[in-house]
Length: 98
Image 1 (cartoon, rainbow, N blue to C red):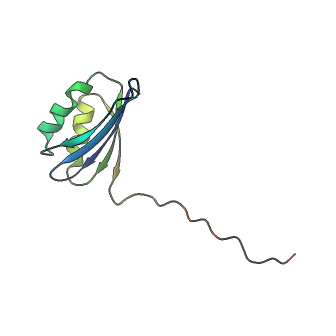
Image 2 (spheres, rainbow, N blue to C red):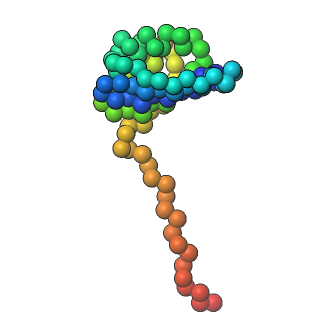
Image 3 (cartoon, rainbow, N blue to C red):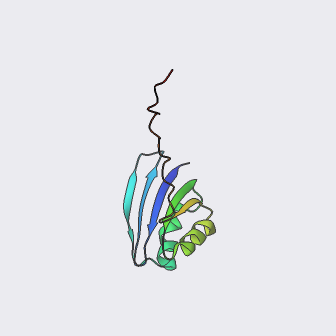
């Protein structure tokens, strides 16, 4: 993967951060307004690259996923509030009988 990035989708804006693994370049910023046309314009430079984006999503996530697919970019998504908690580690038994 050459480009690894992430989007955090909100109603009025989409924040992003990505890393170019070949050059070490890191970019971050926001796409405003958070609408399909702005996302489409943002993704133009990534067309044809080996780029993958994680997508943390709330309202309006679907059009971002559709635009990523449209330009052939990989994606993984997680809905906000649906994170799995790490399993609890139970305390060792206090029973010390032989």
